[in-house]
Length: 256
Length: 160
Image 1 (cartoon, one colour):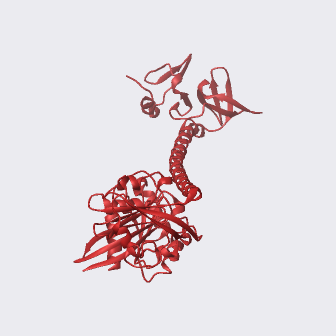
Image 2 (cartoon, chains in turn green, red; image 1 turned 60 degrees about the vertical axis):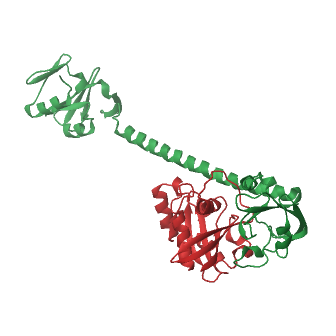
């Protein structure tokens, strides 16, 4: 076993590791679980090492030293445990001790549970981060969808006749014709008469689908059959094309 | 002349304390998570203003609250590095209280607050944390190494 292997050992085999240089000066530690008796800048004054440096120093590579009854207070409880100090091979210029505690199954299970708890919290956090990102994207997509839906023209309109509101499919409307204070709505099947003004109707219609061609006419663009200098034809109807509306009409229709 | 200073790394579990030490002392990073048991002590010599400062880094096992940290681990510390994970709000929600809890038993310790794993966070999130906590935070990443040296240099300067 080398130092890295000892550090990354499975949790149930994990031991306390102390690394010293050739003169037994402390270099680093891992998994220190013993209570510290005296606080000082000098790390060697850990409780369990006090008075034992000489014994540890005498250890040959692979030899172990057994100690009894170490005070451990990691979980706030006072207990005595046996442990064995073993000197492993030198790792580069440093030597290292691995201290194996006889903590019995209960302690190992506690450590395992701690690792599992920590890992689960960290993984849950990572999953939440992914979920939040997906949620953000979902909200953005929904927002864009809503915007597009609201921008998209409706395919129907309710027309108020004398007695009721009638649902008329916009695709079926041929043109609107001013009729005094009223407007005639010419559809492919029927003519409705509504009380309104051309300007109001023009504002409510999609400018992509409808165009004003005269002060008295608004036509559905895709119903136009042909256009000449002063008129246009929708089926068997010839409608006048006003000079001031001509340019707008030509801009809206695709032509080659 | 060499001066020794004890620095404790504290904060919730899994925030990257061990990885920060590993990056600073050994220039290494691993994605593998191994919970720290008790305390892990590392030493690093830092040259500062002509002096050699020996940083004794006490990487203390993460707890959900500073009240759970054994007093023996924090006592006598000259500097505190409080680490949180920018992506886990629960690790910085009690920032002030936790720092107060640790500081109260120490004599005028140096302090740096580190928002770690910043490589996984957006600029907006970092700005939000800064605004919410109203503290001087250094955003680090043990993975990329960003601001890691700066963090340890900062605590070293405060302790001199």
